[in-house]
Length: 435
Image (tube, rainbow, N blue to C red; front, side, top):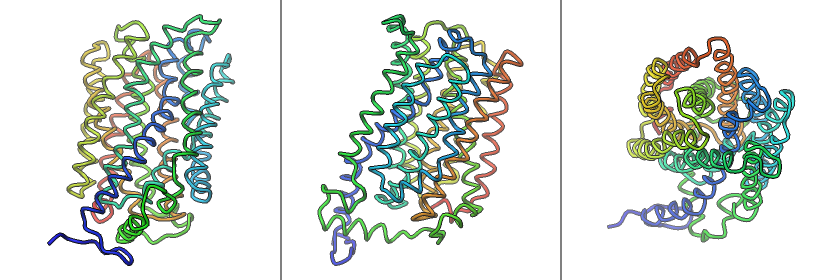
């Protein structure tokens, strides 16, 4: 006899509920992944633009590091308020607003001529993008139960490595092919052309993204009932309803610090890998862009494997610790071989893949703890702390490079932070992580 699932007023076979989640995944995840690809591309294209921009504008490594890092100050300043506003106004309206404003501000970077202008536009870009990632993660908790959330989040977060995989070679080609066209430099064309997709997708959000499951016209009434009943079987671990208690919860802060260690490594590799490759002896924006895409390809493959395995075994803690430890070891070794392109790229490819693969496993945890305004505030705080770390990461590496003329010492510091992330993960009991 086929097992059934009891929804309010209706009994559905398990196979039917599985088909509901497949429908949700095909309707939502590819589009949200594309939006995140555009978001991350507009965030990290400064890494390749730097190769020309710093020379043209006479920016030091410290100026670049500070400007790249100020993005995170603006991001952190508005992260929690933005997610609370998303909870109030709905994902469709607020995500659309976020995407249109960040696309416009990214394009404005082409007008920068001084360090102050660079600082201002990067700060405003971070403020504009604030709330996108935690907003989508909050949105997905309305569609998936905890035991399916790791894979769903993993599919969405594939936008990160895809942005590097597609964006870095594309950015390198744009900078080389468009230099001097209509009097603009290659990096100016880069910011102009790569800001357009974000604005376009922001407008499409208004047409394609339902406010919630009950507003989805492509779900039948019985499917909505089954979905609502299935989600109700998984109440949050922490019973906070308001934002204040969530922001004071110890587990939320431990998760924030763990996420910071993940984000620090991602941003160090994302912002500085083009420079590391160039200083190992590789020349040409297109060649550098192609080489920086390799770590992203490896990340895509490992992300889905680790997220699916974590869901299957309902185990999160060791699925975080092992990749974090591996990444830390690879970064520490890479710091000794920065003059060898092959060894450095191979080690940073493994580190990058491990950290990217950790993200969907990590982000499956917070949505199991909190709900409502508490989830909006808690998820935003977790992401805010991580992005505040991103500011220090980019600035610190730039400062160390100016002082020592090498990023080697900086990489060792961040390898140590990966080990700290492993220790912090042990503070989360299995009943919190493995749901």
